Length: 198
Image (cartoon, rainbow, N blue to C red; front, side, top):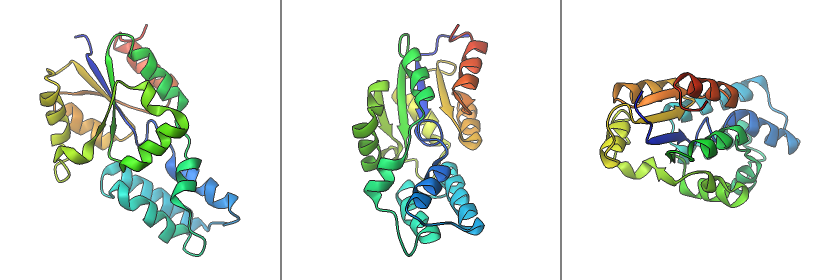
């Protein structure tokens, strides 16, 4: 296998896992019990967010409309309550010893800035790339080919870590190797199988 020059970690699903479960916990801490229908609506919103069907900027408003219309979450409280995946950040640190590790995000910039301020997320990456400014909003498959062209990478020298099977499939079609993120242990195993982390 060729040496991996750059690893791309998606913010949603990898660095910010199980978003809907975290939102449910936040709402219930506010004495806002949720019905089963509201819980399912939150999981549907998360699926739409991670598939790209729902823009990240609309996610928060849709959460409040679906689950907390009488007692909405404040954005600051929402951002303070989100936990990052320390295991994914640990793997990113390991990979940075020999390669560049880039955080990809289609979240609003203020979300990432708040998370970085609270959790120091940016320190684990060589750079942060917002996908919103890449001109690929209507063609999600083009994201990965543009990344490769912009970074002058050839097929087989970059790898995407993402929790979204749709995006990983698009990446592979564009010549970017991909791993579906489940947890730190499985990511380590996939990297070991590729002889990246031994």
